[in-house]
Image 1 (cartoon, helix red, strand yellow):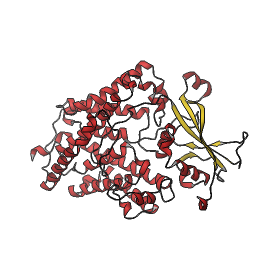
Image 2 (image 1 turned 90 degrees about the vertical axis):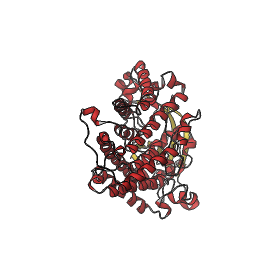
Image 3 (image 1 turned 45 degrees about the horizontal axis):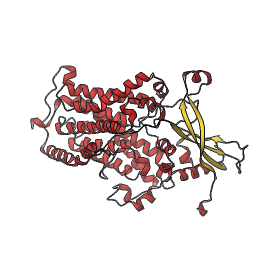
Image 4 (image 1 turned 135 degrees about the horizontal axis):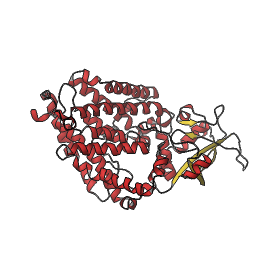
Amino acid sequence: MDWFTESDVWLGRLVFQRMLAVLYLVAFVAAARQFRALMGERGMTPVPDFLRRAPFRKAPSVFHWRYSDRFFALWSWAGALLAAAMAAGAADAVPLGVAMAMWAVLWAMYLSIVNVGQTWYSFGWESLLLETGFLAVFLGNDDTGPPVLVMWLLRWLLFRVEFGAGLIKMRGDRCWRDLTCLYYHHETQPMPGPLSWFFHRLPKPLHRVETAANHFAQLVLPVLLFTPQPVATWAALGIAVTQLWLVLSGNFAWLNWLTVALALSAVDVSWLTGTPASAAAAPPVWFAVPTVAVTAFVAYRSYRPVRNLLSRQQLMNTSFDPLHLVNSYGAFGSVTRVRREIVIEGTDSAVATPDTVWREYEFRGKPGGVRRLPRQFAPYHLRLDWLMWFAALSPGYARSWFGPFVERLLENDPDTLRLLRHNPFPDAPPALVRARLFQYRFTTWRELRETGAWWHRTELRDFLPPTKAVPRGTR
């Protein structure tokens, strides 16, 4: 069984496992803190309503057996506690079989949340976390060396993430081919970060260099992951560096950090230190057999992702089964040129007139007040803020949840208000709520010096006319 383990990537496995556990922790904490308003029993898209429509075979989840807000909260916090233990090294302090069971439990617990998450959990990084977490079950612990087959499966996953993103760009918006997409992207991305204004204000030739470097990182470096060392290690480190650049320039939940973790798993420490790794412990047969079986399973299930990569109608961030095991990835095939934002306001006045004073609700992450510098939240995921960006692109994205969201603002629902940065009606609910659509752009250097504003905004039209609360018994 000498072929089964790859001692030179022991450090890559260690770093990968710790990072994955931390990202699981972030995901479970985000679920625990946000679910009541989004999909709790009185949420905008309640889980009980969804479960009545979705059979177990299409959305396997423990919540088919039982759902209550208290049970969901306990489930999420238990997942966070287990993830924290794994991040602290618990899996290396127990026998191999127990460690595998711990990783499997983390995967199953998060799968149960994703499969009832509806639109709030429709992002590609949910599937990426689940697929990565499934492979982690078969990575072993200190009782055995890193299994070479699973380490290669992690590279194969990293390849699909990066190469899929590269292909969908080259097949998509023309600005990726003429190297101009980053003239707009830093300004129009879903949730800018504190440095996004500065990235946007870089000279245009540097934006073209950024775009070209992105193509190299997503179309060339992934192929080099499968070449001999040390080329594969340098390719992996190059991917990690480009992902950290994305971390600095925006907020993409845990997508970039998980991609960094996958890249570091491919780093061969012996090429970096010049010291060969010590021989790994021989794996037990009961561990080797399922690991080989899982490798064969992933190879078989890779048919549809590969076909998607080769297709001219490439799909973005697609899962082909309800377990999210072997998926397709890719994002930003098109780049919006103009940023639109929905601004939500309320008033104490029972009737809206031209003289009505409206007060604005502030969100935690999405742009609102023009003098507020965007903040860094990633790897934490602000789900409502992200969906607000999609709603500004098209009302169709908000059909299932925007009306219930406004209803809860009209009730001063405490769970919903906890998702916001500022509630302008702390003492009593507003009488009316409205939503207006604005065009936002980053200010220039001169505008920033003169006004202190990071954004300039222009009203476009109403998104929702003034709306008052409807008694629940009449709905």
